[in-house]
Length: 288
Image (tube, rainbow, N blue to C red; front, side, top):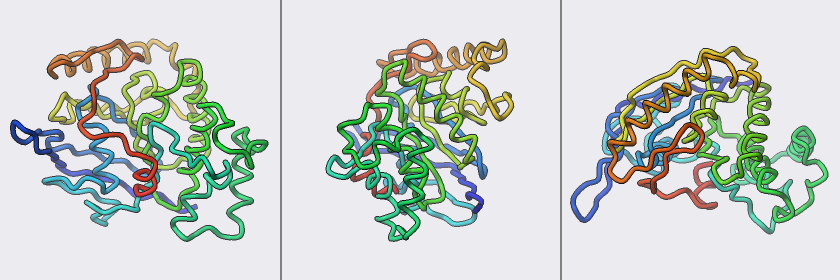
């Protein structure tokens, strides 16, 4: 199996023009995702988490700083990551199977074994019976599984997941967290995961970077202490509860410094319009 590359962001700063002058969104953000590591980014909504993901995907060119995959500088270039957006972004006229294979098709690497591999994976995630169905026949959670599988089977060496479960109801979201946890344990792909859900970040991640209010800086790096493979029961442990409480307090303080911020408890999120819009279906394909 090919080893995923190391992703490194060094002193990344981004600003956008506004009627009152430049709006500083990211201010010297540095982070690393080691090969096979699951890293989450949390912070007040509107602080620039999605902008950071757009920088990684090459859709936003930072005013300063660099993005590296191993030793290759990929700053401002696309085609290096597979992307799972907040919405599934499935093409409604393509079958589930063809949606799964789309990233390979666009990259020109769809081979004779691709269909068999995709069908095998659809069987593993419980969607074999829907391979030839259209997306509208699937529930929201099922559509997100298809979107994740498309990202997983993409030939790109790095996965970015942008709040992929935020639009789901609480029960479906919990089911998807468990599903992703167990599937990631099997594949151990390098993942950068954007979320505003503290419990989700603690359950899934090896490392969590906490961003401040805009302009975003890294204010805390948390190495999650729970062993792999990780069971969902870890959420009931005293250490998990303590970390969730501490991160909630940290984010509450960070959100309070952002004018107009609405600060919630762990699991409810910190919601503000983000500085950059969510990628559309076509943007998702460009990232891939």
